[in-house]
Image (cartoon, rainbow, N blue to C red; front, side, top):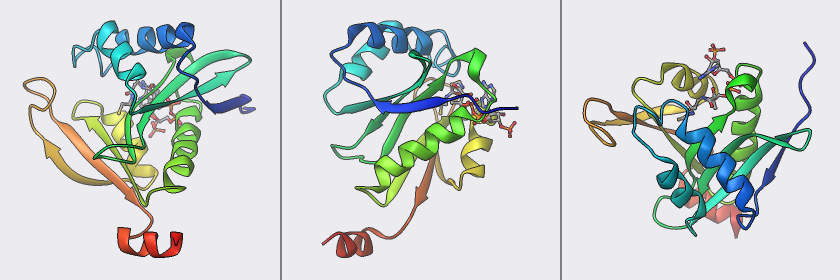
Length: 165
Ligand SMILES: CC(C)(COP(=O)(O)OP(=O)(O)OC[C@H]1O[C@@H](n2cnc3c(N)ncnc32)[C@H](O)[C@@H]1OP(=O)(O)O)[C@@H](O)C(=O)NCCC(=O)NCCS
């Protein structure tokens, strides 16, 4: 099958139409339904000044988005990633993750992501991409479900900063 021509770009948060589309996609998708994340919660995360938002675009249409943290105390954290349901399972999520890794590894030696304990498919995808499980945050967002913290690294911090100098 031919791969769709998907483009990945950083998003200008002043475009409220896209904020709307991202918030809508997240609020009707698992794992966020189980995690009880509302449209308003999502819009707040997206517009937060420490969030960097990236989009997957196919023929001028937003088909996926990701929120990453490149500032603050937990840098290199992929806070959310989602692909529209009709475009899943075609390799777009994998390429989106690889694009986000290039962005994060240009400034930091670690990429972190949390995956819900019931989201086994996504966890398998991250494992295949080289993410290692660091630990389990029990009852972290809602009672009865854990968040699994995962990490991919290219080097210890000290070596990374030495090379950056
Ligand atoms: C997780 C997600 C971003 C992956 O994007 P994708 O484009 O479907 O990923 P790819 O096509 O590159 O890879 C597909 C792999 O992801 C897995 N996957 C995870 N959730 C999936 C879903 N809802 N539909 C299809 N595949 C999914 C598939 O099982 C597949 O792995 P496999 O080949 O071992 O079966 C996307 O499925 C999604 O938006 N899911 C809902 C939101 C979500 O779970 N986000 C992650 C929160 S940590």
